[in-house]
Length: 514
Image (cartoon, rainbow, N blue to C red):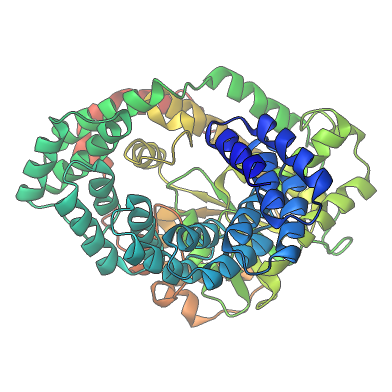
């Protein structure tokens, strides 16, 4: 038995999961209740992408050996891959209970909770992981990120500084500091980042240090130098993430062309009245709008949910056609079924409050589908000055591979034009379901805009929504710091860059605003 186990372990270490599984099945044919063999089999199945099989095998191992932390850790990994976040969290928590000194288990639990939009709950696990493994940079960086999104800005800044003391060339720490809006880089910080940029760096660090140092140049009012670095950083990212603006415009044509008929009057179908969709281009005030709504006692701010795209994708898989090509074949019953599926998937966000927000920016493409599925839903389209919007995207290092249109000013302008025409289309087609929330209008008269926004959502006025910056909640976007501060009118950055943005302005003027 020991020899077969050893052979399987070696095969797994060598990346040969198929061979490991073959040896383990021979062993399990003789010893069906061998918990260690079942654990390794579950790992082999996971390594082959068969996460459902792995979860079943690992549950059997757990039944036989309920005190084996390794079994529960592997089970958590498999369940997480299956999308069962609650089950994965339970399994990881059990692994931590059984092996409280095992830093990787605490890290897995914290990472799972963080990715499941539960950063407050993730903090204790990540703090434990970082304390147990002081050299594990993954745990420290994720802990700093969790501190940032939960509003513990000073703790995040201190941790990033500590990481730089021990790892001065880790550009990720400089980028983390740059994301803390209250922090201003000193001349000494700028000099240190310039020194880092001259070092031998990985491709990711070369990109990160340029975004961070550009922010430092802005703090020193060296805007031409900042713009040059933003251009370099974006070009480095774009080299790996191409964007086809023409193809995307054709896709937007399909989205808009699939939905041209108005909806029945309100009250005919009340499905979806629980949800407010906040859609926008990135960096256009959508996090602010959600923070305002989430400050209301009847509303939970769910953040950027992936449930709507998932429902549409599953329906496309079922029909064998990509969305929106099957829209013309969908019946009223089909749309209602899809709406019910979305509401079932998002039920957790109504556990404490009756209403919730879904703030995935890209859902601006899917407004037609949303209102077929959920006719009583509200859509808030957030808009901001187009030059400020595009510049803000150009200054932001998004998650790897995310927002691929944002790494070139011409692509940004083309994307904004597509967003603009879609926003106008939906507002004309569904005037009583869609509200355009202009960022600059909110700055000019906050209380009036907040009152109008709440009224549109059929919510009574609550003064807490005007004092949104006092609301304690996690915000997992680049605007995490801004939404915890009172509104400021001096947020425009384009004037600092002057003629450097003229090519962008020319591209944006290609669109008729009539």
